View 1: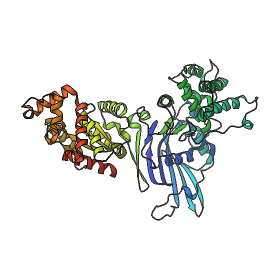
View 2: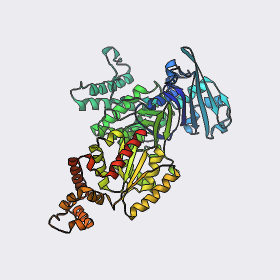
View 3: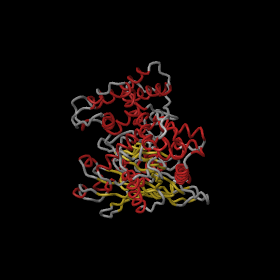
View 4: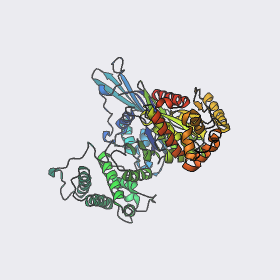
Length: 556
């Protein structure tokens, strides 16, 4: 069928230019007001199935304005590259052979289509034209019937911010809206809307009853079209879509959706499924083609959801076989997608920069380690502006607190402290650089630190990075604090207060302190001592490191 390969947007709203490629599932991340929603709006405007064969309408509001000149550009363009793959469902759309001017044999081959919309602004009005170019045969068509077929094959379902919970968008139901008894399908949909509204507005006296009523309406709606024993090909287009949403395991074409519905037993599972089906019904075209493969756009599914409900939504989303584009600020959702599916967006003067990783430059071991480190251990790190990479847990505990003593908040600055002992250093350097995340490495002054410094310097030279390393002037951070006025904390923890030789053997004393109390405990002791003395007591090397990282994070 159809798959979206790329989207290019020029002079649309706040975006001067953006070029974005897509996988089967693509996760868009980035800070607020970077144009993520605007990009998805441009995409929805072109493939909205409700438009049929009509062109999208653009007003002066949609044309990019140079912030310095306050003058709107006269031309905007939205360009899609679509991959057309032959399968059994494609045979249902006989118009393609005629509209693409290709033989049935040619239609069996994979090809790419460039679909372009150009709108010219004249005063307060615009004139929009479109074209579809077969990039293999270079045949161009402007027949609106082809546009309608493309929208039928891959209709966009755009689930906007807060739609799962109905935030600012609750369907108002009044008595006159209640369908007649003869319209059974509308009655079922009405029950779904009613149940969700009761839950969202807090008007239900029994949440369990409302969830079960709504879920029962979903079951009845599905059974109305897909009875046990019937094959998928006999199911209605809408039920095919709901079937794909609700399947918790991969079902064969002959296995009935009712069997999948019976797997939903827990209230949280039913609620998550009910909310997703409710959102689908509200955002979908009135009629689905049975063999259509929708493009699902989902903006911030996590909005106002409890973590447990969000986890179930994440499972459901991962099992839907449609192509999906999701925007999120949730580490939980990010942890459920391959790292190669992440697109990190940044904007400067209307130009959107898209960063992603190219998995072919990572070994399988690199990806395995990164997947654990950045999806399980540091699930929010991909959202950061800057990383401070450290060797051990002492630095991990100490640096954020030192920054706080200096009146900085790493969380507010978009900085994370990440230890690289388990994942290895090089994969983290590659990942951060590929995603456009700034980084600085703090290493010990021992032999291992020297080896790390060689690796970092080689990587930095290749990528033209300047001064990305701070190497301690002592063996490790414990020795650094020992020699900068905090030896008493280690002597006390080592329980060597009466040993006259304790100051002559810092290594032995520190090792005993770590054995007695653990590194996190010692880190907190050092933090308390520094907090009592004030920021001037922070060793200069660490003070300068934090200042440098704050400055670079703000630039990024």
